[in-house]
Image (cartoon, rainbow, N blue to C red):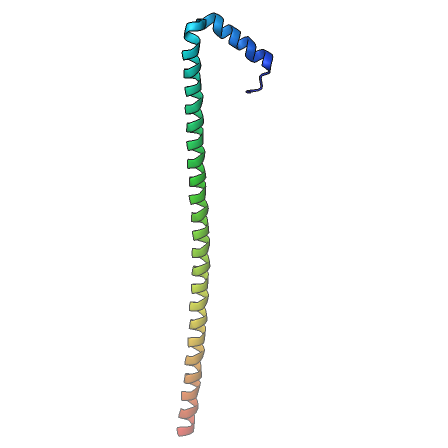
Length: 104
């Protein structure tokens, strides 16, 4: 636990008994356990919040990619339609010219 061996843990327990005394030791151990529990809870909440933010950022990036694809497709379609419209106008213009030449 925390990179400590059994001997080090026993030494800490003996030092705690000497400094705190047997009457304050149980209360102190409970407080330490509560502290570690709250730290673990806060770390878990922070991790969950971070994962949620990363997921939102990922979804935002995906939506921007889709938006770019849709915009490109729309632009391509608009360009294609304009080109075809221009070609149709040229064809009708040529037909009118040919008809005018025939009528003259």
